[in-house]
Amino acid sequence: MAGQSRKYPFLRRSRAMWGSRRVWQPRLVFWAGAISIGLISVLFAVLADKAQALFHVMIGNDGGWRFYLPLIVTPAGFVLCAWLAYAFFPGSQGSGIPQAIAARHLRDDDDRSHILSLRLVVGKIVLTIVGLFCGASIGREGPTVQVGASLMLQAARWGGMAQARGLILAGSAAGIAAAFNTPLAGIVFAIEEMGRTYEARTNGLVLTAVILAGLASLGLVGNYTYFGVSRDTISFAADWPLVIACGVIGGGFGALFSLLALKATRRIRRWHALQPLWRALLVAAVCGLAVAVIGIVSGGLTFGTGYAQARSAVEGAPLPWFFFAEKFAAGLLSMISGIPGGIFAPSLAVGAGIGSSLGLVFGSSAGVAALLGMAGYFAGVVQAPMTAFVIILEMTGNHDNVIGLMLASMLGYGTARLISHEPLYHALSRVFIAEAIRRRRATLEI
Image (cartoon, rainbow, N blue to C red; front, side):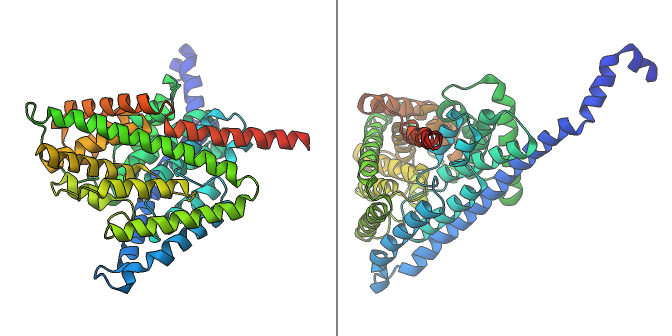
């Protein structure tokens, strides 16, 4: 063996390298970070579900006086979340995906720390849970992306790793994969949405993070499909008009959501400039009250993520024809209110509602129509068609509808591009980039 080392010196160097702490420490820290994303994502999911359940217990389902408690609880909860986000967790507002995208474009670690940090991990989780407990129409999936990116960036700091942009991408992909139990969607999301300038050298980081986070999640909750298993399949002859309608109409509504969200957010930010705290609280209160009114009018259907409604539609139970419009409005108001919370799950619920309504018009299966509506609307909102159909395939466990979902997603994307040229998350990310530049300039002037 000693002779081999003398004959092949690279073997000696290889053993020395792999035995070096400098080599193993970054890897161990990276692996620990990826596993922690899976564990925290599961904990986040459990707490979010419990928060929603407590809200519905609080308001009851008997139509009594408790059903009107959201008129007080929801706006008060919105104000509390907005104040805590402003005072203690700045950078936690909104989905969390724009923050992760912005962090990949920022070069300075101090700039990144304002939108990705362990403090924001705590704030994002706590305030999203509080929002769900108050009836906000938000999801936990976007926040899980910011949590995953924050944990992985912190792992990079502790492990002395230099690939910050790649690690942010890996953490974001792991967050999506663990949130939905959709590893392929996590990878596609990283390529299509998070990394429009995707670098092939980050493949190993993304795959490893997704695998480890997924294993941690599977170890706690087992293998599952987010919306159960869809049994319905698209009929090539009868259902293609429905596929086209769900793609075009769903994409149109998705683009409308994106357009309204961007315009409202920009106007509110300009209006905030003079008195940022008080005006932020006023906007949160008004939006919270409006969400409460919509929730009461809808019979409680629009409160929370919309997961139960979307799943029932996927399983074949038609939703009320007006549900998608009410959920659309509740989701839009929750987003522009400035409280932390994502739009993934509410968007899927709106899409399921659009599909369900179109299914009634075309006389098609409610389950198939809901899937197609989800694909068209979600692709229209985020303008990421591959992510849309892959995530829906993985969440329903039925691969018989691949072509139909692909077509609905592409039609949704194409329709959205005609209406709104800016992808929602990337447009919002520029706000955080601009804030970082402004902060740096102010520091240099001092």
